[in-house]
Image (cartoon, rainbow, N blue to C red):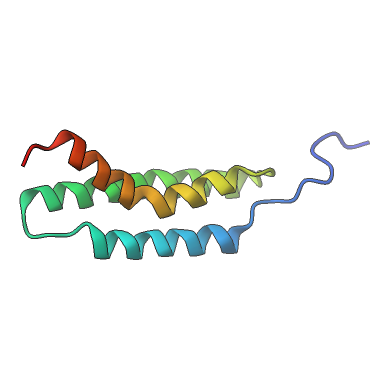
Length: 93
């Protein structure tokens, strides 16, 4: 008899990938500017994306189940906004 998470579905990968793409589009339209601050914001946003991609790859290889994909989908979409708000708080113009 197998033990484990019976009845739980795997992650909704089409939703995660589409949220990741939407997040990249939002970052590409909202964050860049020619100043040094714009470059830093874009670098931080891309680093967040890299961490999310590493985590998604780990989840895929481990065939994780549950609702963890919802958090990462939201994080992908909101990462540009999080970086923008962080720059407003920490950077004095």
